Figure 1 (cartoon, one colour):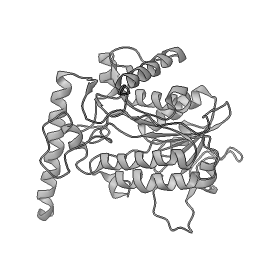
Figure 2 (spheres, one colour; figure 1 turned 135 degrees about the horizontal axis):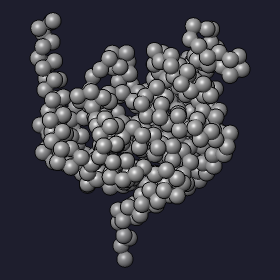
Figure 3 (cartoon, helix red, strand yellow; figure 1 turned 90 degrees about the horizontal axis):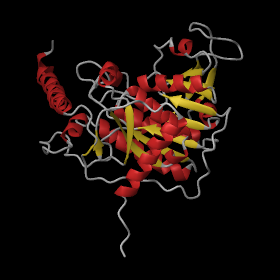
Figure 4 (cartoon, helix red, strand yellow; figure 1 turned 30 degrees about the vertical axis):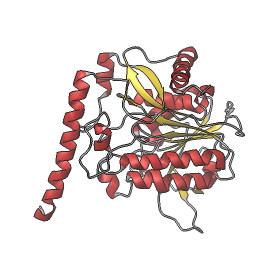
Length: 358
């Protein structure tokens, strides 16, 4: 082991351990806690001059980041419902089971966050081709331009994700700043001139908060956990991504929805979040949507995928920004139950909006 890198490694281990210990203590006291944790109020994006989402049966929905845990769950829900044509884009060529798991979807492999010149075109490999019946790796697959897929999508979900702390994904060039910066810019550029009606972005809690500067002594306030998560700039990258999404709303004349679950240092393992078994054992499957970015609490993958599903079609999700918090109870399982969830979001938004001066 190179001794010159040992101080940096020990520092990284110490930061991970600090975040995990503090977060574990807080979770032990109150496992799920919808509480105000930041100064920024809710933000509801205006919808003036935008065409309605109006997704109809047979429209195409493209999930970017389909190999992620949330992306897979969302793909399964969309295909089970069977109303839309589903396209899956993964940046991980080592997931040969993706199109085996979803034989009814169009599956593409490609890195949409790669650096390209102005004259270059982003390309995707079609992992399966319904016209030729290709469903296995090792067989020649057609190459298609990314803009052909994205411009023909009625809705696009940006569900790309990576760890908040350095990992092998970062070594492969999939760091937060790349995925949520250059990646989103490339996607939006490829969507220009297309027929997309709604764009959904999977962001995270803390992206819009006033945090202590990185590499500084943080304030011991309600946002210290988010400062830990942002130590390597993951939340800053999500904030930049949100800015790009808001700009695209007016520039591309579409509806948007920004969804913020709780992130952790890593997606799983000792520095990850609660396992799904913990949510099931505690019966924390109910979903609370809170406008803006002023809440803290745990968000399961199934809850996040369910909200993304609704963000595509629910009329009250258009041009909204919301955090997801699981709480004790059952998950919404009907259209009426989801109407209640979004009705509660609308009521919280109304309560958080300052009254006009008289």
